[in-house]
Image (cartoon, rainbow, N blue to C red):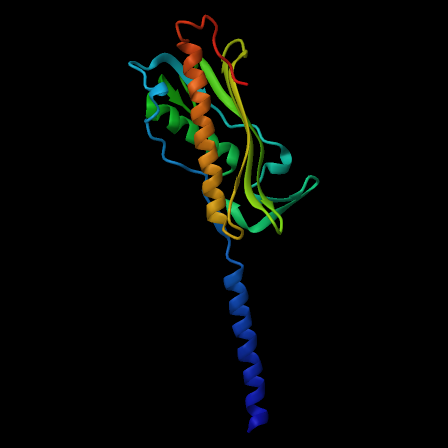
Length: 214
């Protein structure tokens, strides 16, 4: 009797282990997002600036141009999480967020991702140079190296730029907190860029030249 039961026990164990494996291999998708709020007095204008502005996708190096979230272990070693993915590629998500941020403050007469019948006066883009999760036994952090650019649509001259290279320590093993830390950095640095942008178009009376980024 026991000999007849043992094979069935083996089969049940195999199915149980297979079920557990499937649960562990579920792919998770993470969002780069934030809800901009118009609370910065430096960005509150009486009237929107009378320009059309187009925000285009940011540039990104080939090694970071992936939906797979990147882990950095050393200066010369990165890896790609197999089951932790960005829901939207970072260079697209950041551009979408910037349009929302600008329109929340009503900074321009018209700001959108694409103009079909009209030409914009200015374009905003930038580069996502690094977006990754630092991983080591002693330290885990979100790291973002990012640049914003405003340039004249016709001349292609860069008028305002802003660079940032930041990291935010986070708990190990929590990818949702990593995604939020990245989003928070983007929100703060986008706000800094927009302040410089407004100062370019509306310089202080004591400043005769437009201010640019560092």
